[in-house]
Amino acid sequence: MPINIPDGLPAIEVLQRENIFCMTRSYAEHQDIRPLRILLLNLMPKKIETEIHLLRMLSNSPLQVDIELMRISDRPSKNTPIEHMETFYKDFDSIQNEKYDGMIITGAPLGQVDLESVNFWGPMKDIMDWTTTNVTSTIFLCWAVQAAMQHLYGVPKYLLPKKISGVYPHKLVKPLS
Image (cartoon, rainbow, N blue to C red; front, side, top):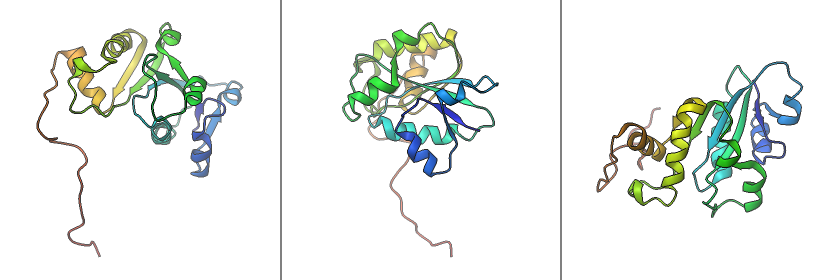
């Protein structure tokens, strides 16, 4: 089934080349089924790459999925054009009275940074609190899991000298064939 994404989003071309059925919002308005409303808070530096990655996965659904992109307003993106952010992303103020079926909060490259010292920790806590009443189900990815565990459940983040899980450099020791 299609993912419903904003008209003109650059990810459309990449996804369509991969035979992923994308439906623009203007076309989706004429359908007779209510799509799932999913909000994506994209904290990753390379916003467009992250959009493409997540939209690929969300497109593999039997339901229409309406995607809205959100940003933390006082956190400018260093790696994504401002025009892209202004065209496709909404600020928390503009969506805080909305209800969503689901939300995805991505990670950020802040693995060795204490949560309290993150410059957007205040707005992040406000958003996480808001999800408890306005979002049916929230998925936290990577760093956002640590943020949610500490803020929502009181489980602290521990800074370790090296990582203990995740993706590591590797090499094939024995070929399969």
